[in-house]
Amino acid sequence: MKNLKVPDSAVSDLKKHAGFWLRFVSNHVSHAFARKLLASGVTVAEWVVMREMFDDKETSPGVLAERMGMTRGGVSKLVDRLVKKKLISRRDRSDDRRFQSIALTPAGRRLIPHLAALADQNDEEFFQPLSTRERAALIAAMKKLVEAHGLQTLPTE
Image (cartoon, rainbow, N blue to C red; front, top):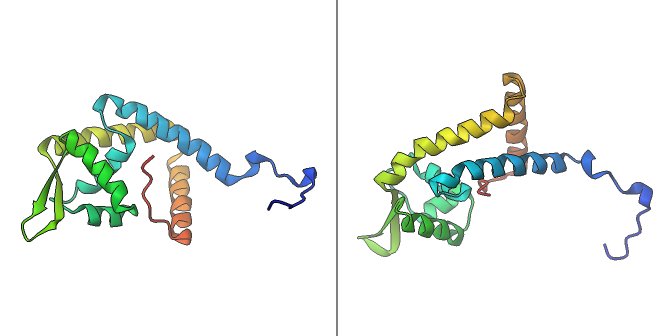
């Protein structure tokens, strides 16, 4: 790459790249959602963890990390923050103290429907200019790319 000589005329326009537009839209959708979450005291990453846990009575950080496509360390940091906020509880397993069980606290469980409503509101506000058919096509196209590239890590930022 260091000695690669490319004529100026071969430099593609930034705005012709699909990736540019995906990032542009994604940044604005994410920032709008992050602003909506401010009053709840939860970050987007914390919301993703909590929503992933919502359908389970309890789980482990390792299982959660695998489901989210994150490292155990990354999930542990998020869990630590949520434990401090009293939205997740953590306890050592009685059969093996090297492993822990985590669960949403009653306060965390009560917060999820409110945060989900904010996520729905954010999507509606941002994607309102698209018809139902266009939204479905956009989601289908994104899912196709996720599958084609074997993407697994959930977006947390």
